[in-house]
Structure formats: C-alpha cells, structure tokens
Image (cartoon, rainbow, N blue to C red; front, side, top):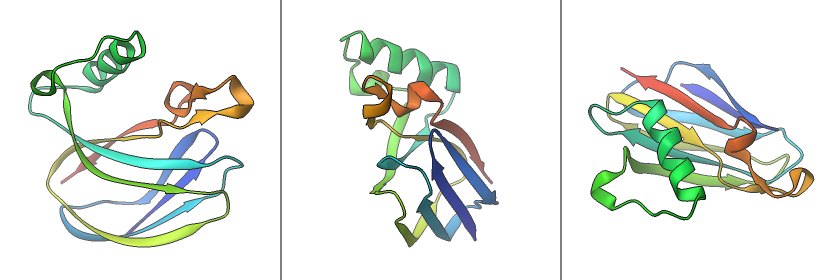
Length: 123
C-alpha cells in the first residue's frame, strides 16, 4: 500500500497510508542504523506540541504520561540496506514518524534533530 524509505536523515513516504490494515514496504537506504517509530497524535495536539515535548525531554524534564501529545503506535529498526514488509492496522488520525537513534557521524545528535521527523495524515 505504501513504501517508507529511511534515509540519512528523513522519511520518504511513497503512496498513501490509509486507515485499516496496510501493507508497508519499509527499507533503509541510508548509511546509518535507522528506526521508524510511529506515534499517533492525541486529539487537539500538533507537531509543534511534539517538538516542544522533545525539547523538554532533551532538557532532562520528563513529562507525565497524561501530558504527552502522542501515543506510541508502532516501531522497528533497520540496518543500512535492510528492507522489510509489515502489515499494520492504522486508525484515522495524524501520525508522527520519528527516528531517535543518535548519529555517530554527527556528534551523536539524535536523527530527529537532523530532520528525521515527519507528520503523516491517515484518513
């Protein structure tokens, strides 16, 4: 149904991810280990709220679970050159794809700080 390419440092989504069971082709064409962690935004929250929560976490201030702007939905890691097919049942909503892995080539900066964070709308 859709392809999700993990590159240094972004997600390239081909096709449309719809609600219901979807077959995803996920592959890493980058040079570093990457992960696809999918969170579903809670009602009333935005990508700006996600960015603020990540900044707060990086500053060492943990948020209470009920204050988080998103809920974990799915996650996987892939080494460079690895691909996989996975089926996943998506609910309609806004999702955030994030890679938290630190980059050894960039002073261990988390990949999402290098641009590997993306908003995906599922209808």
